[in-house]
Length: 90
Image (cartoon, rainbow, N blue to C red; front, side, top):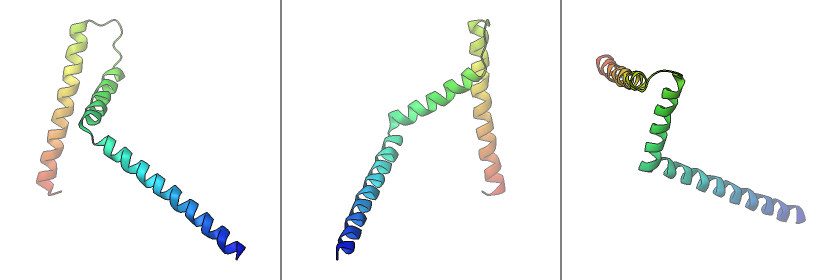
């Protein structure tokens, strides 16, 4: 009997732990899809891309042109990918 009670307690603790993990995962998922968080992630990715091209000593105009060209190239690549997906029926 004692062994059954201990097993029941163990299973109850495990159930609570799993419920907590599910709730935490659900909260993280909901937070990830909030518009302000999506914007932050997108902005952070763009900033990271910009930082990859560390341009020490270059002018503001040069940095602006390179950053704009990078964004344009990315946008064109995404469009090309979408068009290829349409052509190949993905």
